[in-house]
Image: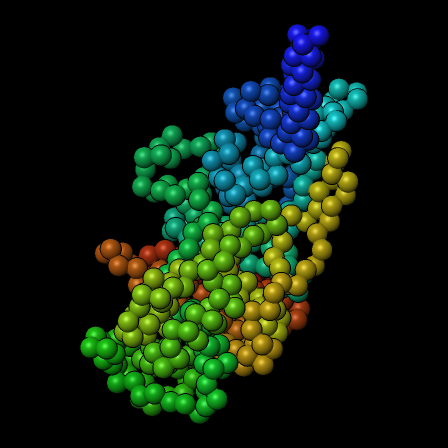
Length: 457
Ligand SMILES: [Zn+2]
């Protein structure tokens, strides 16, 4: 009797353990099954670690960027389009960690927990994805960047659709250069600089400092500082490209006076500057659809007054992604709250239903009043201070250029960020050219050309 009791006890334990394991297995199958199915050893989908059978990725005009035929994965036939869209679409090996082909692999392969990657009829049915980008506009951006390293990103700030997203150095995913790992020309080629790289913002950050002043200083519109070309803050010098004399906010932004914004940031203080930067999305993870975007950073916790002043002119340790700078410009254009950028326009296929993105308003980055003042200031930059040939006047561009010092014996990083106020061309943009020198000469012409292509001119 005693023996039977022990035996049934053991049997109970074993049964409970078996049921527990089955439960765990089923849970894993449903929750992580897509990950298993995506493993490189699943030859239904991948050969040699590469996707074979999967749905297509197309641009907004229906141009197929990559697709599968008879188990062969191939990209668009035009090398320029392949190269211009490689960071957005992704390479065959999945080295570009933010590529749609990698991030949306479960959807493209049509995995579902009941049938795995095959349907009742035994066929693999991957979902198809349509992106918001215009591949020919991306090709234009790629050509304008040429052999310079940089990033171009542009979106419609009323719908959130990203029309152009290009990172260089790029490469042709069908003909990957043999020396891609060793040649300096391709250094960082697997990184999408629009979303995964953050750059010293230089003078484009003066927009953030200006917003902080508008929100924290009651006399922001009458306050002046005197620029003699240099100033001493906390015992160390800060210099300006010009000698601007006594100037106020509008003229200081137009002339991009370092002294004005350095003194302003020092007077605003760490708390106010940090509060405004955080409101605008610094120091937070950002996402573009399902794709992780690197965080921009603004941290003056260890800064003395001189370093705080440098931070006000976009130097010190501050770093910004082109994606984030575009989003800030979109927020200003949109009255303080951005429409969230989108890259995936729609998805269709088995198990996916028919997904179409929604126009979504993001968290407010600044009060509407602040946005209105910044709109006027950025429009004044282009109208009254920049070279009149920089942008076609009909587009009513509002913008700020930047020329960021990066040290290490490198040339300055050229920036431009802005948007068109003309409602017929509702685009916000950010362009970065590494070692490009002046942003007005390196980055701004790229933005201008793209806007003109969009405007049909
Ligand atoms: Zn100055």
